[in-house]
Image 1 (cartoon, rainbow, N blue to C red):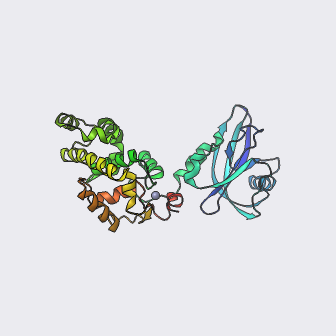
Image 2: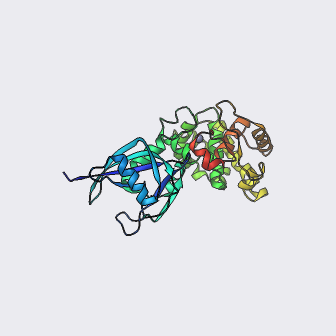
Image 3: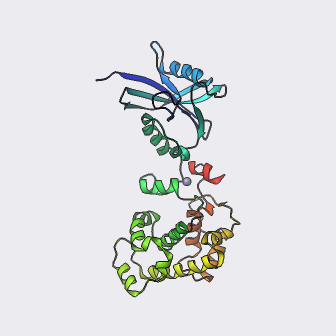
Length: 315
Ligand SMILES: [Zn+2]
């Protein structure tokens, strides 16, 4: 078995964000991002090594806390046993003494950086442990968590996406959103990639075909409503230039907040939008469904205050 190199690193938090550093181009794994740290030298404890490395590389003194986790990773040239400690800065401001760059990032920004392979498992753990909205079944369904972390409440100005969500939300009425997510690709295939021009022209034969398709929710009233909603959607696009312009006009283009409390499922805004949509012929878009729709597309951002998505999306 190859020798194992003991490495320590610091997960340095400033409250909401943690510090990452980019390796210099000339070193192994050059320009990949990592947690600051390094090899433990003979005679040092892990904590002593970490404090020394952070002084050498960033000019800061650390308060070293508990171990966050440890991983073993085999690189082609060496096997690393990495122990990551929770830490905060006791003294100093980080300076680039060895690294190419550094960044304080929130949990929702992890995907924007290429990390050293040894860190990937750690980052997944940081994401898994992040505080989130307390939705039933959220933590047990990766599909649901992916949707919560990356889609829900993110402001969308893409007409294709706005229509897709309109279709899914109108079918969602009375069912769980998780079920809709599971059937989403089935819907996409059955409804011609959510193309409103095609859907607006569906005939009786197509409706019969959809009623026979187990990949979607087979509810004739909702299928007929979707055809009508495609027609109303196209009329809105014609009148406003885009559906985006229409749906965001109710808040003057601003995202508004009504944090998730497990109780509220309608408000003055959803009443107003729902009423206007009904007037334009939209079906199955009552105020509760409209509330849910406005949350989905980010007109309302309703992540809980302590949810990690709140910071990036709510400010
Ligand atoms: Zn949330």
